[in-house]
Image (cartoon, rainbow, N blue to C red; front, top):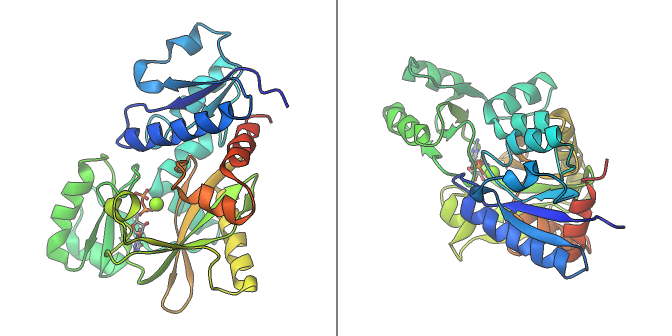
Length: 301
Ligand SMILES: Nc1ncnc2c1ncn2[C@@H]1O[C@H](COP(=O)(O)OP(=O)(O)O)[C@@H](O)[C@H]1O
Ligand SMILES: [Mg+2]
């Protein structure tokens, strides 16, 4: 397949810039190694070269977080008529927004922890009554666990909200799920083998994700084939309900009674050689080069 001239778009200005540069670098390396005419473009340097036109035939979006994963760059490329990888404008914007993702999942009858938005006029007692304790507070549109904290008593809510407000103007409180954490990588609309994430930290925080050497990733998982299939089906439904396409990653948990709870959908998850989607692909016999090529092929609709 001739992909033509490919831009691997990375960097940008989001809090996840550094991770995006690592993802983009790994993808660029993988594509270049298989005779694909790919060039890295740092979105932080401006996107004029796209507007001037004819420089690229398609774009591999390797940007995480706002400005890259949230529909804005997708809309920009859509307007220019340049094909790009992964989800379109609507699903990208929706998945970036944890509050509205959860509203839709609920409406579709899919399980996601109880939640409420906590604006400036919130009342701690009402939040506790709605979602219970402990709870978890998150910025509505952020990633990499930035601004997230666990709250075990009502008195900690204000500080948790303040921390989240450092990352987004909207903040969400959600019931704390005590149990196991998993992720389902999605490629071409189908779930790859599940991965279980095990960390001694209170939750899968920034350090557990990127710097700690104590995080363990279990793949294959020990759930039994039938259960794994069910959970993969839940993940692909969660992906489809938000209108996502191409590839992505659904984070979910299993509580102490083994019930699943959807946490979030990432439409441009990490793609470094230590990332979760490449790990799941590997378990399915898809090496990083093939994964990069197959994700690139999602730009062809
Ligand atoms: N409801 C919850 N109960 C317990 N832990 C949670 C819950 N929601 C999130 N977490 C923990 O916080 C981490 C980050 O939350 P997530 O919603 O995935 O945000 P991010 O977009 O920053 O990855 C998760 O990987 C998980 O470890
Ligand atoms: Mg997550």
